[in-house]
Structures are given as structure tokens and as C-alpha cells.
Amino acid sequence: MLKIKIGTRGSKLALYQANLVRNELSRVYHNLAEDIEIEIITLKTSGDKILNASLSSFGGKGLFVKEIEEALFDGDVDIAVHSLKDVPQVIPEGLTIGAVLKRDDPRDCIILKDKSGVSEADSFEHLLSALKNHAIIGTSSLRRRSLIAKLRDDVIFKSLRGNVDTRLEKLKSGLFDAIVLSSSGLIRLNLASHIDIYLDPLKFIPQCGQGVIAIEYKAGREDIKGAVSHLNDEDTLVCVFAERACIKKLNCGCASPVGAYAYLKEDNLRIKCFVSNIYGEYLEDELEGDRGDYENIGNSLALRLIDKGGLEILSKNIVDDLS
View (tube, rainbow, N blue to C red):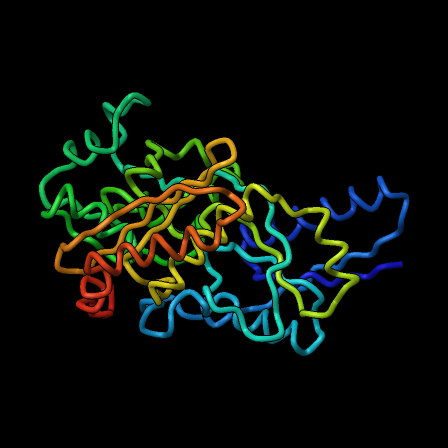
């Protein structure tokens, strides 16, 4: 009988994702008439412990996976379940991302404190224009700040950390006029009713891998490779690996003000990426090609951005405390 220990963070969202993987593996093995035993092990990561400072000052979002990857190396867990957007583009040697589940909603969303006059027909641009002068928006993401500042350079950004419930409570308490979150996390936790508007991913380009659950394991574990292969969604894989190739070629970290989003058009893959900096410089481009060439498409788009001055734009970023 195959026994699998799943390593995960202990937040509600992380546990939802780990339980989803466990349930899917159990379903697959039940249909195969084979036995499997699965245990979920929660681990506290460095990112969970840092609540009063920006993640970028401590190394970025890789802090949410470091301890879990160490548990993989030590044999304490067999697979790690991550939000792919938290996983750095460079995976430690000896580990591999062996499967990605079908992508959930990749979009960002806005939640307002004052919902009067809001309707589903409102656009992102309309909502922003309706916010009062010098409105306070909660987000620690340089990417989100950059995209919003393109349209409203008067708004005040303040850091927003903590789990989803904590962030919603901070909005309710009056600390912010609006907050920006990933839609998928709210949807997974049955909190989508809080969302005032979803942001078009072709205009408000999401973080690389946003909305995707990834499974990581130790290279050479053929038993684990065979098990998780049943959960892999190939359409999602080609899209997010194109995104990751693009961001990796740009040599950007999770905290950089960049975004990448790929999607399929029949047998073609189309990817859009932007780079920016804290001074308001912004550059975006897109590229389309055969889906089977997904990694080269991502690399090629990055090279186009580099040729247009993308690295110079990124080099002007000063990572500072976002409080």
C-alpha cells in the first residue's frame, strides 16, 4: 500500500489545498481499486512568522515554502502542496514540481469598505475613479501597486499581511478604503461574496502561477511521480510553465513588480507580461506560439522585454519596507 505524507502550511487556505489533493488522490486510487494511506502534516514557515514587516526585506515569498522543502529533503514529508505563486522560479536541486492542478480563477479582485453604489457592471476603472482622493488601499504587492498607480497616482498604499480572514477584518475595521486580493483564495474558502469586482487578467496582469495549486516532491521518487501524475492538468501546466520561464529569464523574484499570464487559444499559447518600477515606468508585451513550445515562448517574451529596456526598468526598483 502506498503511504503519502503531505506537507503544508497551517492556514485555512493551505489546509484546504492539501485536503483537496488528499481527496483527489483518494478518489483516483479508489477508482483504481488500489489502497493508499495519506497523512497531512502542517509546518510553520518563516513567512508565517513574519507579520510586521514586508516579505521582500526577508527574501520574498520563497519564505512560504523553504521549511516545507527542507522537510522533503529530510524525508519527513513525501509531497508538498503549494500555491504556485509562492514558489520561486528556481527550484532547489533535487526537488521537482511534478504536477499542477487545473487552474482556478487567476484574477485579482477588489473589495471595498463602502459598497454603496457598487454593481456587478462596474469596471475596475470606474471603481478606482469613484474612490475618494487619497484613498487608502491595502496591498503589500509591488505588482498590484504598480498597476493601480497607473490609473490613480494619488492613492495611498499600506501594507496588508495575514491570512484571508485577517485581511478582511482589517478592511472592516476601517484601516483601508479598499483591499486587493487573489480571487482564487476567496473562492476556495467560500468568501467570494465579499468580492466587489474581478480584475481582467489581460489588463491587470496577475502574478506568475496565480490560482494554481502545485505538488512538489523529491526527484527520483517514482512512486510519488506515478501517484501525482493522475492529478496533473496539462493545459494548466503549459501555461504556468511558460509564465515561470518568462519571469525566470527576467531574473525576477516573487516580490518584484512584474506579472505574467498565459492562456490557450485552441492549439496556441498566448502569454502577456509586464515589468515596472516604483517610479512609474511600465512596459508590457505579449507573444503567441504553439503550445508545445511553451518554455521557449516564455523565454522569447522575456527577451523581447529585455530588448525594449525591461531590465533597466526593473533595476531602478528599491525594495524597501512597504508599511
